[in-house]
Image (tube, rainbow, N blue to C red; front, side, top):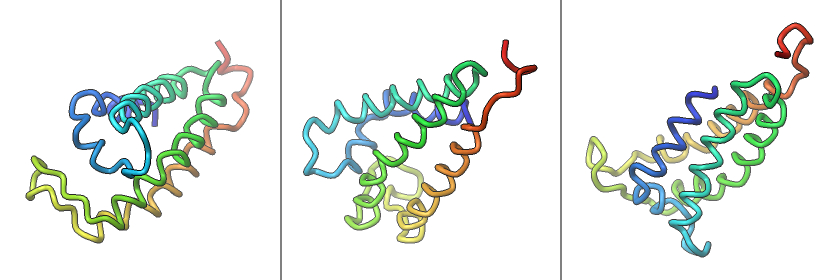
Amino acid sequence: MGPLYVVAGALHFVVPELYVLIVPPILPARLALVYLSGLAEIAVGVGVLLPRTRRLAAWATVALLVAVFPANVYMATSGVVVAGLPGGGDPSALVRWGRLPLQAVLILWAAWYTRPVPETDRR
């Protein structure tokens, strides 16, 4: 799980304009929020890789996924078109709406990492 979040977070800095499009316009400083969420994704990604910080990072991942859920709802309901993506940048309704239950799967995955680390793995 960790490397996926590190890569996803890094993409917030590589192509921030793609992420800004799915931040609900009601929120202020959308670009800053994109960078902040990217930094948070990188931090939780690294955190779950380390036994000493795994549980805390997993709980932070759950919180992050809940915090960014409005962006996924906005993407599903607003018909956001992301220029420059393969296939024209207009994700299908299935892809846009499919992200919503995917968040639940990701939350469950992160919650799995909140279990105590066995003593033998603590180094």
